Length: 607
Image (cartoon, rainbow, N blue to C red; front, top):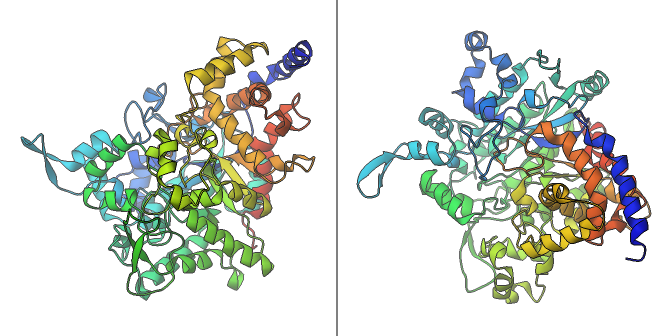
């Protein structure tokens, strides 16, 4: 370091500029993926059909249920990747009373009906070979925490019916309570959004997660397993009718993901569950006869054209596949229906999160073709992080028979060497992937640039696991070196505790900015298409420095204070441009300005 004294003075000035920010207890922000009603809906509403019962609604005071989070467990941070809906580890993260200090914020509230495969069938299994125990009872204790009756309802009810139940629960919530006189409103259109912002109200914009939402009662069985078919006009017509119903609702959703955890015949899903011990529990105690096949195996990739069923063939880099009877191009038809603007319709945009690498490539191709026809469809990834891979590496390693194996996170060099032939010499740099969660569910490098080029948005998740918090490079040796560098800048042990927990998020932010394709243009364009996508109350384990929506103001302060120093430590401070001493300018973009611009430009618009 050429001028250590001057450098330390500069960073002391940065810390001084951020002193006012450190006391923040209120912040206007945009979140592209948050579940404000999910836990309370599944905890407190026993049947989706009850939300159509006027007497039940009046007698039970449904309109206030989301204002009352479970504060008894609020002091505990989730320590598992699937915490369920009850108990010590399932503390609320995004109930309305946890949105205090968020006036004038815009939150994309997501409805995600639980997939049937996460609950158990009505049967008993032998336990320790001695006595029989209900699978639903075990599921309640170890997986979802839902009681047997609620599991039965999910198992026998369609995704569309559960969606309508939570949608009605959401729209019935009162706008204001006495808690800090806070107002939360589910907006219907762009005009209501602008009015909410002007009145300092929290505006909720409805979004959807999972193509299984589109399957109604006639065809809900079609996403229960690889052998289930949706290759006839009756199935497609129900999906199309449900799309039209959703697009014509009073509160029009902004966007929808085509995939979630399980295979649904519309799009190949990116594998999202990684821990081998945890997935074993799920496979045993969830819907055991289908879960392992649909969630942990990969039966098709891409937007489903010919619906292929993959058969593992470890002797090659591909998969032997036999097409099913029929070829209705279901995935492509669904995308066309969602984006359709004929008859003065407005599109329901596609969120690429949870789609596998092949599906995302195909969707990007569709968007590029539409651009040639004069339609500019922005690419949306509502809650994600970087994988540290390029497109080819992501495509090969997320495809059958390899399909995102757990060994990639524990022994990456050995894992990559195993598939050297498949990769054609394009081996991922483990020095990169060891910093991230490297599976295909996360962003590959070219994809980041494609989002920027489309005027799209990337919501950066706050989920520890997806940010790569357990990646191999976060070792004791790394922390010793990092702390030594930070000491020279005037930071101490109290700062180290925060920076260590914040590092995976900061590294992902800088990586995405670096791979935006805009960093050499001498402007802030490299920072113009990132936002927050917390995934609060999506049954996730968030970073320790921001465990609920209440903590967002503090997260802003932490990033303002620590990001410049951290960027310097890893030789990425050039990515902050001329704002090393004014990081709040870039943080304002990340937390609010980019998201607001995007939503006001594309929400409720015919594009």
